[in-house]
Length: 247
Image (tube, rainbow, N blue to C red; front, side, top):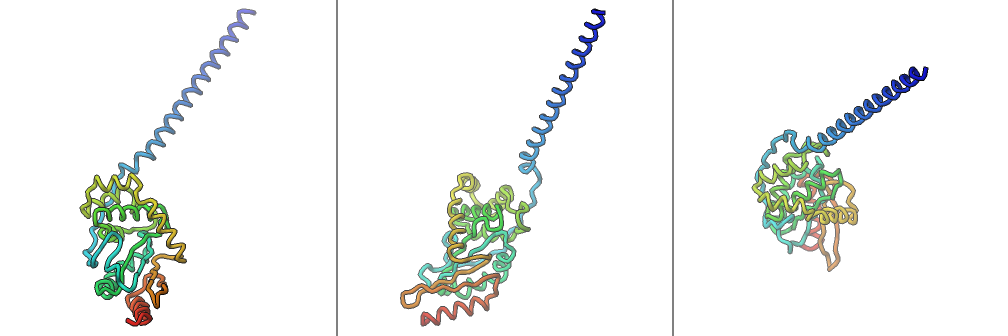
């Protein structure tokens, strides 16, 4: 009897050991599969195919300096608050900006400044703005501005992920080492955040919005244009401002 009881106990122990080994093996497999899945999520974005970027049409802007164009001593300053992911901002760029540059900036009546609104629409908005400012270090803010809008495909859908932005940097002929160093250092993170704060302080609630500032009798006056308006609306507001100044 004792021998039989001993044999049963040994069998039970062996069965328990087998179950423990099986449980450990299942655990190892699950952990390995989980690690492989996490690695895939991390690696895949960097190896998946990237759509080619399109070159932007050539644009003419007078006296460009970083994110501005025109004479800083012009009687009127127009500050655009924009988002590279905003479809209406693209409409302004494609339909109105060139006429505004020709009619008022090139003639010395207005000084034009482009500002982002930080991550207004989402993280890719902020990334695109930083890319534009980094391009500005190499005198190509406006070239990056144009190619960003020309390759806008939607909101936070990967149009401005890091690899696409790198392709745009290559397309406009940036020194990639300088560009990469600028992006990786976060050099313009604070400026992009300050843009957003400036927009809030100015009461900007939508993109694009345009702040027109000028002085009358030593006092700063402000006009605001909201939306992708045509050149006729800008003409109306700018001419009214010039009349107030007696010009």
